[in-house]
Length: 475
Image (cartoon, rainbow, N blue to C red; front, side, top):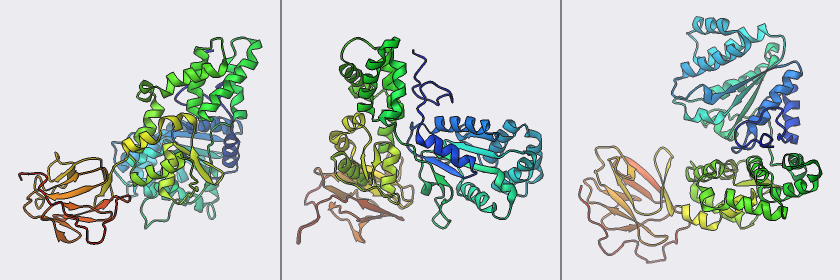
């Protein structure tokens, strides 16, 4: 039954391996009632598959459902092109291409976002008799666009509020899906956060929800008991993670030999996920690793929190905590009750304490725009692209300064005989200086903030200078 399981990609709405969860019924019910919804969670949790299934059920209930995959619109676009592309997709789906294109060209005085939503209000809604549900899938790609998309989400919020005075707006409902948090949708702190609609939580399959997958593991009709035992052991490892469960089920089905079910599943799981080679080949495992490596927030705090969770310590779920939200989006952890736990045994085995220590930076340097540079060993600072931290300004020397690692937790700031000097907390660096958490490094017009929360603090009277020459540089 090689056709039974689907590993990667969106499942067809009537796929035999689709596992229906409570969230499916919840999403369909909320959208049927006209509520705005959002499904924001980690990758490969079944968001798109749930969306396709919901869209089909809504159509069966005499509603129009449109799916706009934002990756299909493109990213190397300006605002005019992007909104026009979105409108063109709607026109193609509803056979309104000409009417929408005419409206777009006739209202060039309006901003792109105004034109887009006005076209929905003035062209689409008067022409339809059914309720229209628009799904925006792969929402996180908007962060890679060259223009600010805060106004896009603000306009969706305005559509929701406009229902009070404009009954026509009752005919349209939006559902947002992606790997993001609500706070990331509108990033400008001067704008009201995106705070409308109903959040649909996608959870991993429970064992009871996963049991129907046993049908795909049956070699013959009388094999139900063995197939059931295989599913129990598969769930033991994956804890119902949608992708890992489908992937392990398919591998077990392909190698479904005689013998103890638990030993068979353990052996295949080892080959598929736990071996050194597997860690470098499986898309999901690679994604989790890279998501952590490229964390836009405080990576040290994120890994420290994850280590506490991995050890079984009680870290309480706090939806306002950005580090906790980012941990959830990596997929490494999930919420159980009021606390966070490691997502499953596969992740617990792979992303262990040794892995954490291997990728954990010793410190971070916060740039003026808020981005952070991770430091694991020596770090050069200068105005050229060859520097680890590039500060392109004439007041910065080509080789201006160096952060040098002297021991496991000690990093020292060294001025490389720069033309304009290096300051630390307002004092000129004349010899190597030990860096402390929250130190402010001033180089030319730039102020960098050093982050090392776990650094040993200075003892009273202890010198923070290194009494020897460490490196010799030329400008």
